[in-house]
Length: 178
Image 1: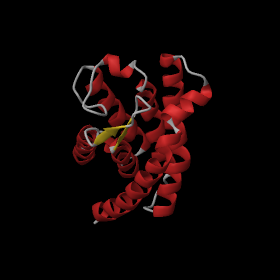
Image 2 (image 1 turned 90 degrees about the horizontal axis):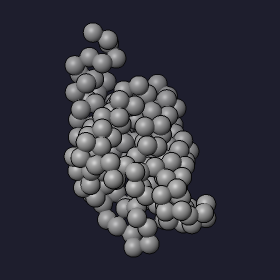
Image 3 (image 1 turned 45 degrees about the horizontal axis):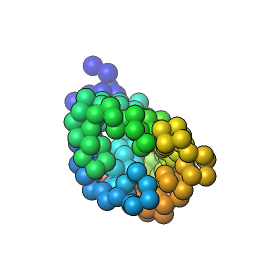
């Protein structure tokens, strides 16, 4: 069996998929945007910090496929292709690029500063590119309107979630090394 996908790793990946699914329910809407503030990015950051880039990609892909077949695992408890092809679907596609990229740039050793920088300066921009592009296409918005509806209101919270995930990621990686 491939060492990168042994039983322990597959279990960790499954638990992180489950954490992503559950964290999507920790959400509240903002009245001026179809997007919701949720804990999903914190869970996905943790996946990136605890897994290799390839493992992170398959974790994000599994989460996306669960939602695509209709399970209510997306933010706010939604599922199905309508959510993926809707105004916030660009975020879902971006997750499969952003979080493996964070995992790639996090470094080999647990390090809060490096984790935080990867999440903030790699993950957030990639996620927003997908999200803003998606909302612009689906809702026929210009760039400014797309940024106002799907990026600007979420930046402070996403930075705080990235910092929290970086802290937890370092602690969990050190605990798992023992």
